[in-house]
Length: 127
Length: 333
Image 1 (cartoon, each protein chain N blue to C red):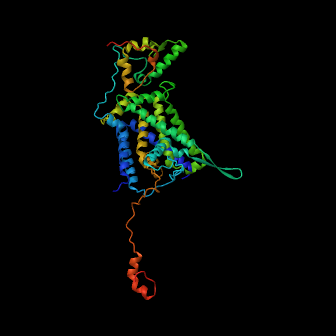
Image 2 (tube, each protein chain N blue to C red):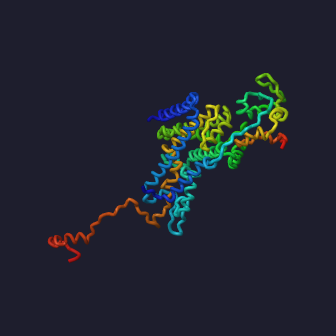
Image 3 (tube, chains in turn blue, green):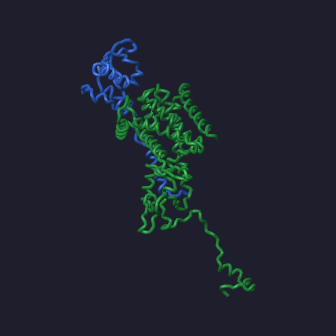
């Protein structure tokens, strides 16, 4: 089998293969460790269902912010009827004490940089 | 095939393809759709492209194809157009880069019109070039952004891309400009085939099919990000398990993700057998990747075989006596 211009085409193929298999060799031999957000002790339920919180908490927080800042509504009534303070520092962070052990776990894993902390002070972590 | 059929049949095919993972996952075949199909598609993509390229490389290109758009290298006092009519390999490299990165051939797209008179007029038509550029570059950026699912820790360039792409911080999660651009570009590339009569006439099912698959891929992706969210942590767990070659399917990833993954797999598997192979083919276009140096360098046709020749001397040697008999002049007595 005769290949013409093999001196150009074969390195071309190798470079393309290297680029397209990039995720494979980048992770070669590494174990993928899923994130482990630390769940609060003694509290079973969040303000909404687990699945909703996992996928759409950013939507909820954004709605909360708009309600608080623009309409001065500060109490959130959960589907269960329970009332919560619509606040990051006085609400969410009361149960989820540590940003590093809870928020950052998945956010770092997925390279998400929420802009909560542009304005809010990140809680001081116990080190 | 009529235009309506060319538009409709691939649409039906893609709708069926969307239904396959929806039904399959309901039937509990999530391992098949999350592991077997993507791996198979990836292998098909690689193997197929490799076969294509080797097949192309086996075809000899015996001469320089000089369909160029600029002045060939000539006398010193004739201005040489280096990048439209390259003479050296380095100049070819520049032409190729302009072609691959900026789609220079499409930039030269022309529109022909009959004006009053009647007079034939040609005008520049840049919309196809713009649409193609918008689509391809958005697609590349989106592909690179997806590396956040395939690497741990996430490489730095992803961060840069996400920041630039989400520059306007519209909505939650912030809108990526490329998501909007790719939908607009695909819509344009689709509508141009449907609306312009001449292009509708030459469009085949194989032109519409990849567009529909891309629509399915892009819209399912946008749907997952902005509207019907899936558990993204589990998506990354699956992606990481695939690239570390220890496949494990976490439970409870939304069906929309499987549609997205299946559309991607279809696209990958379809790549080498269709016009999408231009991804590799653009590098092997003889009209783009050959230096126009025929006047300076001899290019020998590789399938030339030794031609059996019978020279005049041999001819005369053979027939000298007979020639003399009939009085024909001979060179040697």
